[in-house]
Amino acid sequence: MIDLEFMKSVFESSLDINSSELTLNSEFEEVPGWDSLGHIKIISEIENRLDLEFDIDEIVGQDTIEKLIDMVKLKLD
Image (cartoon, rainbow, N blue to C red; front, top):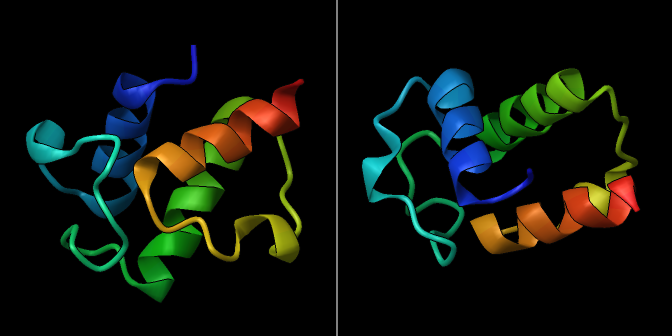
């Protein structure tokens, strides 16, 4: 299931952080390591786990965890 817990796991492995503070509203650059390079690491981790591939247009502007979840759900539908 693609939910907050899934994303917490993705953030832990891709950014090597403790995800206990993450919420659906956690935003880009407020999360330690979630900068432009961190964003690529997060997307790559999602792609690897779910055997997906995102276009640049899909990943630009995904600046909250909730938006990332929605992006993945759209791709899986």
